Picture 1 (cartoon, rainbow, N blue to C red):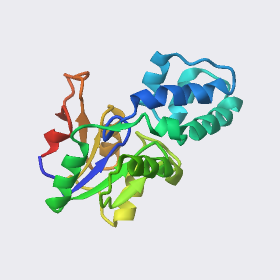
Picture 2 (picture 1 turned 90 degrees about the vertical axis):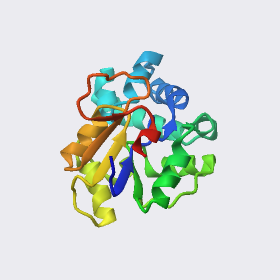
Picture 3 (picture 1 turned 180 degrees about the vertical axis):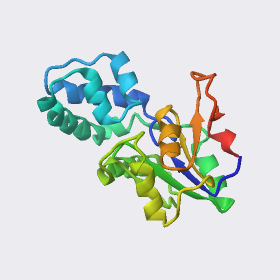
Picture 4 (picture 1 turned 180 degrees about the horizontal axis):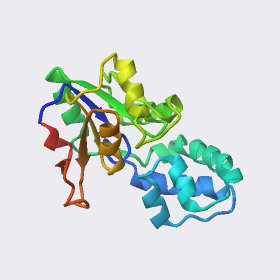
Length: 205
């Protein structure tokens, strides 16, 4: 399994954000008096923000209030302090760079937040692009996030480029954009998945 360009999802793929995102989601929904359960928050972590809002069943006129609350909570120092890189993340990324591969991040999170987290974790790597939700209109699994990254990189979509992510919508997003998809299934949740599946980032090497 060799690719020339590796694009990565962020939450749940490069970094373990589970502990930080539950209070972040709750902070946003608390703005309208909606008390999100931990189970709901766990599900929303694997959806784009619009999907999460629809899934919650709240009124459309409340969407912006919740979104603003979530974005504010995301970048609070106490939230960022709860985020940890997976044990193998930095080592795998460094090996890919040393092997001459191009690396990037494509996430439904904001690019500002991603950069804040990378700085907090001391991960200083030559990412060729960091694409966040502030840079596109349609979230995953729509191909726009990947197509935005390809445009920044100045390359065409083909099978030598892969998108690596921890939810089924990640490889779907990659395939929708015309590149290869790789599922990181750390807890063996999708044993019947028919595409490329690894159990941690080390499986990419």
